[in-house]
Image 1 (cartoon, rainbow, N blue to C red):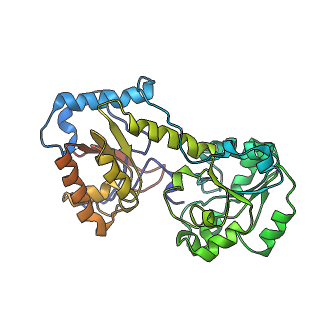
Image 2: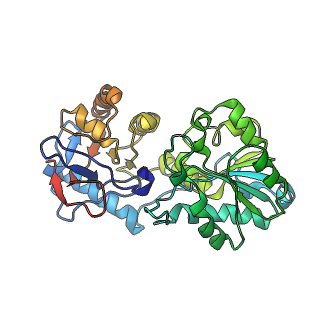
Image 3: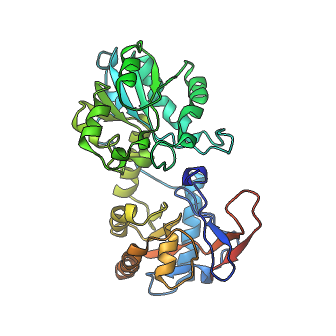
Length: 363
């Protein structure tokens, strides 16, 4: 499976040990040892070593999880599904883009249904209002039609959580899908096949987006994890469907982000993860204008490591973004922002649960 199977770990082969490594950092959580030593922090873009400040960073991050952090919630100008009345939804075909990119084991069993459960409130709201839900998502990173990335294994869990039988289409566009949509009763759900089975999805091809949009009357985006990507099912369809609104999950995340950024309690720390620097350039540059501390995690850290001359072996690296990583480090330094990378990784002889592994410190 693609990185969706292990959202908090990423592989790294070191040249000296011919082994793989996984970082402990993720988009939503950074583990810092209780005996944190300021000298072990890798201070990128921070001109002066400040142990007390480092300890304050750790304390502040821990407070986020303890409920002590203060944040504001700001109402967004964008419309959400909650703004639509029963009359707006009754009998309407609603194209819902969710992020159902859940991890599956070798037997195609779901190992973590968090993303499915996160999508349920929006879907339930729509079917309770009498809408016909056309549910779409991607899974993994297929190259064309790839059976192991089919959304079929998700149907039983979706049906269980929604309390109705979810119908599964064998495609995401075409005559057969159109027939299934036409036969949907009010308050039902049709799950389309993996939208990334078509290369036109990620290219945001207008004609492909038009075909997806032709299935519905209005659009709801509840895929926070992929909302930043201009794909046919996330951006392209909005040119053909009105209204296009946010789902409850997307709205919640937007409200949180706006509140946290507009009136932060300082020192203001942000954590960004992901496999590629290229897809986070805008986010990182924007945060460098606002934060005091920026912690990076996920696969992107290896591009930053290599940019500093560290060996990363066969780990995921964007070779054409090494200069960009260097420039971001320099920009952080110029702005007085402490840009931090993980101080330890887990090295293993293979990328699997039964791998032989150990912790490797980068200090």
